Image 1 (tube, rainbow, N blue to C red):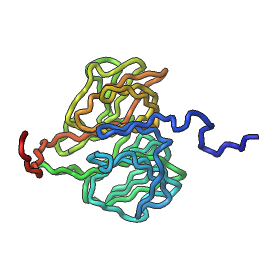
Image 2 (cartoon, rainbow, N blue to C red):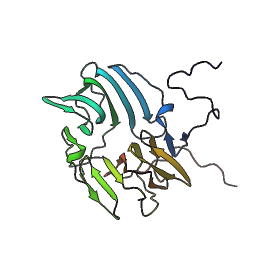
Image 3 (cartoon, rainbow, N blue to C red):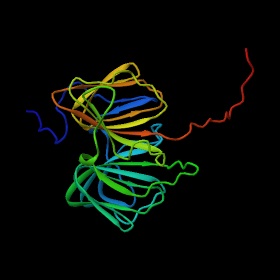
Length: 270
């Protein structure tokens, strides 16, 4: 007689079979393989780090799974700019005199060096938490903290029908050194070309499914998956399935690309 299966554990199959792929240039990470973490100053919350500088990324992104009341245990200021996007439940975000109660699709931006708190309200909640060092620009003042809702952000249609952009932090705002957008695809739609660019991406699948080209390989992606794309990785998305697909997409923008000084002297040739 076989023992009962443990909750959350897949039945026997091909040992180690999974969709995970981590390379120096990109990563595809289904949610079931991302183990929970904890950190000082945050309680009642499982933190599943999706990417960080340890992977090669220039930012940190995590999935927060908060119990009721879970989140920051006091005012927090780690010197980084912050972005929170609520997936489900309700999250209270407080910045100075401002307080926002964000339900699913709500988001908040907190500039670098600004104390803030976040906590789940009236039950559990899940949110994407993105953090990045702010890159100042001469003569341009950083933005103040603000919040918004997905359904209130206009859907912009570019290039072809069936694909929409929602620019959550504003479009072409030079005060921002990053963008966080939602891209939506009707079934069967895709980017009209393979992109190769200097920006890096952090992508969280919100709804649906699709095929993502990374380098020269196609990867199947589902709601809940995370994808990191480093600079210059060839990339393209093709929406599959029966309904609309959508993903939350980070990228670094609006700043100069600085040269890196050589620290190793060239050796003898030949």
